[in-house]
Image 1: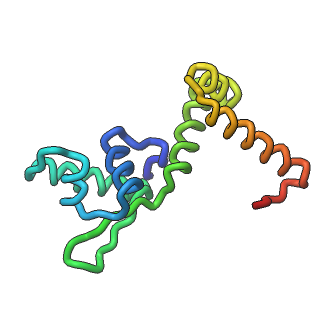
Image 2 (image 1 turned 90 degrees about the vertical axis):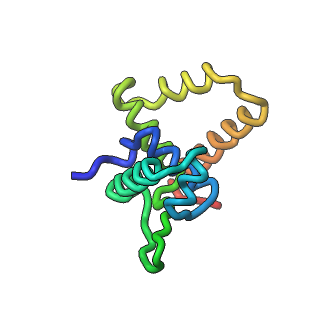
Length: 136
């Protein structure tokens, strides 16, 4: 049984970050992007990490060329949501409000961040009033 997307290790997350930020890559490109000093052992480690990410459904491999190219198959926002849900489940009995409260009150939110949160809440309220329809 494969592990959940939320069960991504820090080393795997570093590879995903590179794929999200820079797009699809070969193993060699990922070694160069993520690790300053390459080498056979680092290459083998990255290969193993990509195998695990592929098994978890977080990356997909294009096998059409002589060199395989990897790309993220999970969006950054989706992984963030799953990891936050797992934290809420583990620490807050599944309730999101305590987790969100801690994130908002514990962080140094800029005026822009606060405005984005207000806009998000307004959009969510509007969807509720609109009968749950998604509006662009």
